Each structure stands twice: as structure tokens, then as C-alpha cells.
Length: 121
Image 1: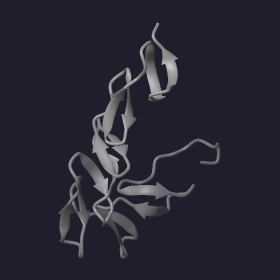
Image 2 (image 1 turned 90 degrees about the vertical axis):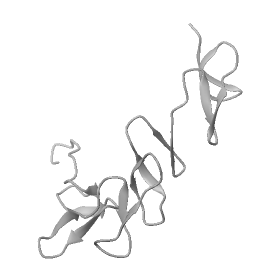
Image 3 (image 1 turned 120 degrees about the vertical axis):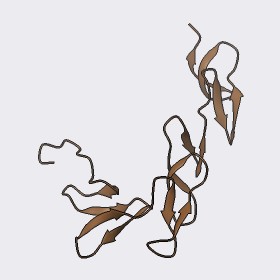
């Protein structure tokens, strides 16, 4: 807004400009040309396929995916890794591709096997 404070986009809008104009819709919605608004066509976890009544399932754990079936936003409690929704790694572990690997001894948080970002207290 004019005060420089971020405002939420309208419902079903994934990305909007500084006004109320939607630039990108979630994959389960399309622009309704007569109402000039975004209308949800499919439920969360599905995306619009070849037409407005063709709803296809997103990958497991995914709330919104694009038309190539790649996840762009996961359900609560999961994290987006590449285009998949995975359970976050526990404290003392780091993400190594699709798996969680142990941080070095004495390390509470790390980004790689040799990169400790927070030591045990």
C-alpha cells in the first residue's frame, strides 16, 4: 500500500501488484472474464486441467500445484523441497536431497555435514 505495508492478495490470487490486480492465480482458479475476478474452480489440492470442469489431483501433501503437477505450496506442517512436499527435518538434522541427515556432533543446527550454524548449548 502507500505506506509500504504488504497487503494480502485477493482470494485465489497467488501474486498481485501493489493494487488489487492479480498477476498470477493459484492453479485451482481461473480469471472469470465477465466478473473480472478470480473464481475457484477446483478444491484445494487440485488444479485445473484441460477445462473448467477438469480438476486433477496435485501430488501428496500439496495444496497448490501447477499444470505440470509440480507443487508450489504445501499443506501446513510440510516444507516445499524442489517441487515436493516433505516433512521438515528435526533439530540436529539437515536436508540432503529428499532425506534428513545428522548434523556433526555438538551441532544443534546445520546446513550441511560440515557447516554448523548453531552449536549445542
